Length: 122
Image (cartoon, rainbow, N blue to C red):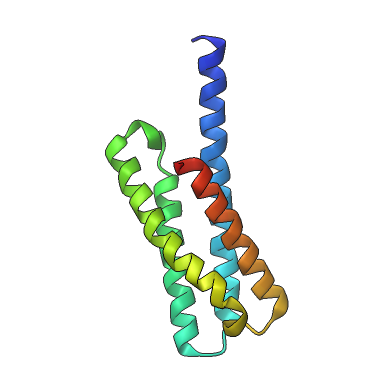
């Protein structure tokens, strides 16, 4: 394997690892937000977002994701759907979570995950 192929493989791997780490942090932040949300409706909304993030994490845990074109395309679609819901949740989080620290953590984790997914999926 040439040096450029090794370098490209590590960049791809690093990008996938960054994406996984970002969604892992987001999952933890959403789980924390669930416990401090004040209404059942808000809890359901946060749990729904956390469940979508968990599904994405599960798919990211599978080895050689990009080598399985069909699986990669399916995951890209899942992330696109989750991105819309996460963007809306990010805009509303201050009115849902009244604990400033938790709200700030969730907004930051959403932003990081959205940036990582944009970088990874292009």
